[in-house]
Amino acid sequence: MAEPKRGILLDVDGTLWDAVEVITDSWNEALKACPDVEHEITVEQMGQCLGKTMVEIGDRLFPFLPPARRREVLDTAMRFEVEYLRDHPGTVYPSVRETLRALSSGGWHLYIVSNCQKGYIEDFLLALGMDGLIEDHLCFEDTMQDKGSNIRLCVERNSLDRAFYVGDTMGDLEASRKAGIPFVYAGYGFGDVDAQIQRVPRIDRFDALLSVAAQMEPEQDR
Image (cartoon, rainbow, N blue to C red):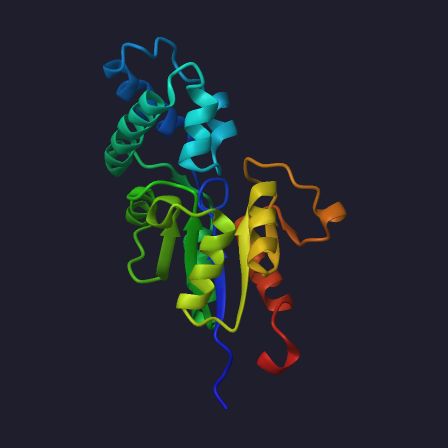
């Protein structure tokens, strides 16, 4: 009998790296070409947007623009962001590389699902520098669906028998529940989840995921 295929699905911002400052810099640079956006975006404002879909970010940052123009400005900023991050990457959290390698060696298949635009996950993978370790990824712009739907799609198209999602926001928790898989809270990230009330495992550094993953293995898989 074949062993069950086990997968770990991962968020990016606040889980694998911190890119909020360089994203903010890229947006402010891109918005110089948009005279109808006169204010600069702060790091705090951008941090509050991380984890949200592209549409939600546009609504939050540019509510004063007509919907069609809002989409144009958002597209300008997000395309520039992808180009900018190739040469100005975020900071990969400590022990991410070593932990991902250990999880993969231990039989876990690794994936990324994020609410970002196309190209953003690829920028992270370039910064990570570990070709082939992440087997598949999905973003909001790939499907224009919510994160819960994309988590479920990733699980299904990779034929996972068991899986859980790691993220740092209540939105990540809700998406995991919609997808019907367990959630692990990255407490060092940007979000705020009361893990005790929500009854989910919490990690305060990424390498703690090794022990959580071991606890999630059924006895027959060990």
